[in-house]
Each structure stands twice: as C-alpha cells, then as structure tokens.
Image 1 (cartoon, rainbow, N blue to C red):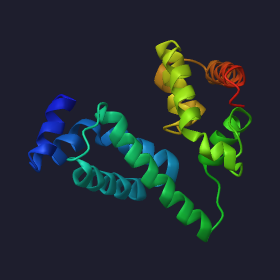
Image 2: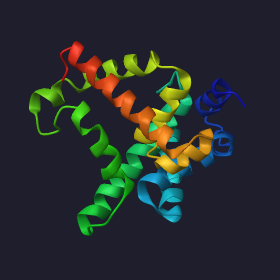
Image 3: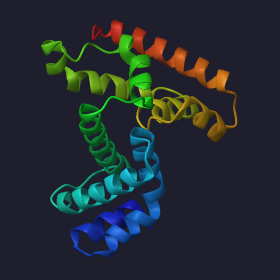
Image 4: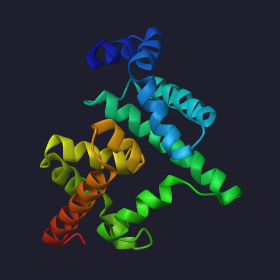
Length: 185
C-alpha cells in the first residue's frame, strides 16, 4: 500500500490505517525504538504509542513524507522513554555514544542562541544530507537518526566496520565544514 493510500485511510478514520501502517513500517519502527531503548518490549510499546499519536494527528496533519513522519514520532517517544528511564537509573546505551560523535558538529544544547536557531540548523543539516550520495546519507541517518550500531550498519550494507567508521567520520567532517561555512557553528 502506498503512503498516499495510508494517509487517505487515516483521513477516512478507517482503522485499517493502523493495521496497514504496522504491516508496512512496523519492523522499521520497532528497530528504531529498540536501538534507542535496548529492549524489545519497550520498543513495542513505543511503536503502539506512536501509532496512536499518528492516528490522533492525522487529520488535520497531512504529512508529505509519511514514513519520516511516523519514524519521527517513534523516535521522539523512544527518546522520551529513554530520558525517563535514565533519570531513574544510570545505564549504558548507544545514544550517548552516537550523540557524542556528533557533539563537535552541533552547538551546545545549553546555548540559548543555538536553541533559537535550531530550525535554521535543522534546515542546514537537511540541505547537507540531500546533497550526499544516497548510500552515504543512509549510513549517516542509520547511525544518527535510527541509532543503529556501526556493526549493524556494516552488516546491512555488506561493508566492513572500518568502512562505516570512515564514512561516518568523513561525513561528520563535511557537515562540520558546511555548518562553519554557513556560520552556524
């Protein structure tokens, strides 16, 4: 089923929309949530919460890129759940490692001016990513949006772990250079 058909089901308030969304994107959503939370049961709950959130948001929302819209909902819910559990107990996760890799490419979260410019920064990162070759962009997104491990990415693309690390390093360096050029860093 095409995304436009899915959105039409949501607008018609047809409950098949949720089942069809689960069938088409459920595995990807669970994978993203599991990479953030490290727990299959919590990931499943996040996906269910995201499906409910999407059901309640469409209509009036009419996302141009449904998959990105859904994955953003899953990711936000999973990150909120992660922050909540992290506040209760300190534990290791892939999130700090992935975000630490990007730390020198992005302004500090504590910088009020940087917070005000977050939309401008987001647009600059989107422009940067759209200019990358598909494979390089997908590796970057898999690591820093879906929070896949380097080993998972290497297995998915049939390349070495070293190749993934080099690709990520070069992409981060190019992003940093682009953000400096646009005076956002």
